[in-house]
Length: 223
Image (cartoon, rainbow, N blue to C red; front, top):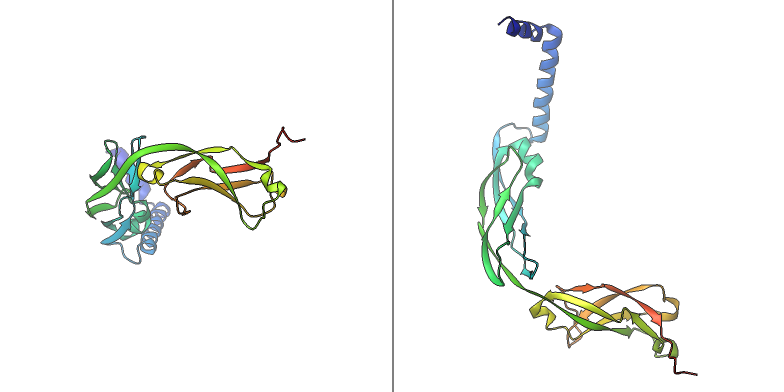
């Protein structure tokens, strides 16, 4: 009991009391500043992108999940500071090929309460992850066929293309475009694109490596 009295006596000393009071006012003013002038509890609705987690290694996500609207509640200062920390996700650890529906989990920081999630369930489409090897074709833009252009080759000569089976089956050839004198760019790298039979670029694919170099080709049979 005597110890409590000593603590109380210490806290009620003018110099200590005013320091505590000043600290309290500072906290109140900070909360008002970050809470748009109010300390009351409020609600708001935000749009959050849904992250797909734990996708099996043999599958690829073709159609990503739609965003969800999350209604949150809390003190206005906490909502202002914690809104950006709201995260929505779906767990694809048990996914199989095709379209499936998953419940959306939403996490938020301390002091921010999730009231509702709309929609609560989202559908995603996954496909088998496939790969194939393609030779790299060099395409010269604005460059006439000369001995110099005929004497270069891509390095590496082939690349591996990975992606959803339905998109990979559309790949007709892989090309790297060169638009300047190749003799000047033997040390440069060039991006590689996967094209369909109509020459249209295909997205949703991973090319390994994504860039190639050009090297001079010496025909040992010449001379």
